[in-house]
Structure formats: structure tokens, C-alpha cells
Length: 73
Image 1: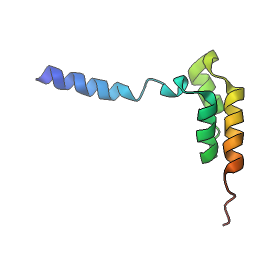
Image 2 (image 1 turned 180 degrees about the horizontal axis):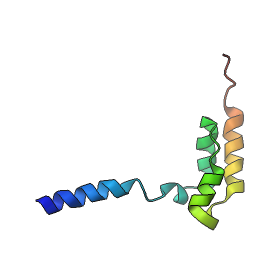
Image 3 (image 1 turned 90 degrees about the horizontal axis):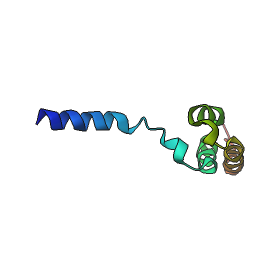
Image 4 (image 1 turned 60 degrees about the vertical axis):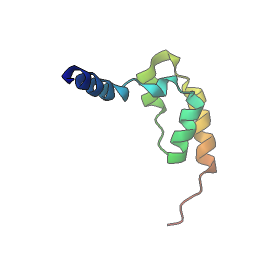
């Protein structure tokens, strides 16, 4: 029983550290970050390596950021 619990805990602990953003389309990541106005392209590129298309990320970011309303505070 302890072995099963240990395996479950280890699996949960590793579930969030797989770099799942690296397998997501760069454009979609850019859109998500553009809505939040949080440019993370350089961070994604550093973490994902040469497989990450930062130009495509930037396109998604700019598209989503342009649709976001300007705050009126």
C-alpha cells in the first residue's frame, strides 16, 4: 500500500514539470499570453529550444493583444 501511495505522489509531483507548453502551437501560446499582456516568448524559446517558433508566437501575441480593450482607469 505504501508503494502505491509513493508512486501516486511521485506521479503527481512530476505532472506539472514536463514542459507541456513546448508541445503547444506557438501561435496559441502567443494568443494566451497576449490576452494577459504578458510577453513570454523569450522564456518559451529558452525552455523549448530550437523547436519553438518565436515569430509565430509573436504573431499570436500581437493578434490577441490588439483585441484586448484598453483599461479605463
